[in-house]
Image 1 (cartoon, helix red, strand yellow):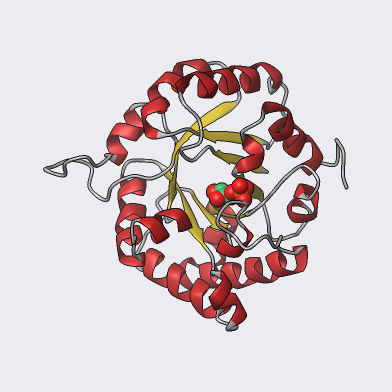
Image 2 (image 1 turned 30 degrees about the vertical axis):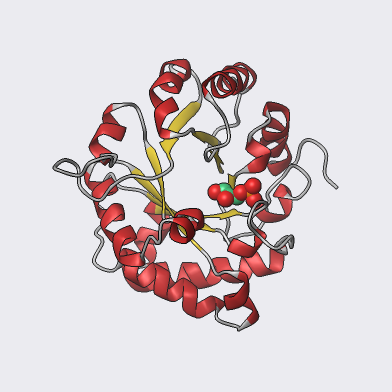
Length: 259
Ligand code: 13P
């Protein structure tokens, strides 16, 4: 099971370091097969990385550019991220699609670039409220994945994570509805079939994980992580408080409080 904390642009340096220190201290013992990834803002990555040494936490970035180097003022190279300690990179988050007009074609290039720099892409896909209301969910997932992943080759050491994050279920910017486990299982199955279509079943089994994100907290996480198709969660708001994020991890495996 993988737990990815997306800290977005929500914390300054000192809060980021304090949260990181608390998490490394309190998450020394994780069950085998449990991975925890923290994704601070770009500027805080290099301050967080030294604190993770010797801990079970891994580092991720929230985006990268589609070239590793060149005349691209202001952009962030996936190679630099890898050299600065990142193992994961979130790509195609709905907030970037919305505020920066990121397209599936650009996200495709970013996925290729991330893999070329030995990063694990965490590809975010998901329909918005209007698309859901118009019964377009399947079409949206198919289009986003086909464009982002068509022609992508996963090498022997590559790994990829697909995060189903319905825009309407995100705690900030959503419409205040939580996804039901049935909806997540359904979307997960759709995603699973598209991955099999694009890469084959063996690649799905060995290199691709499907996770869920959108208002995940300690009270609902187990309902998602117990779904056969889901191997982890992408957590926004609930990852900003150490106690709650630790509770999310505990509750996912059956411990902690459940509503
Ligand atoms: P929330 O968990 O705050 O809904 O955020 C989800 C998200 O956008 C994670 O990438």
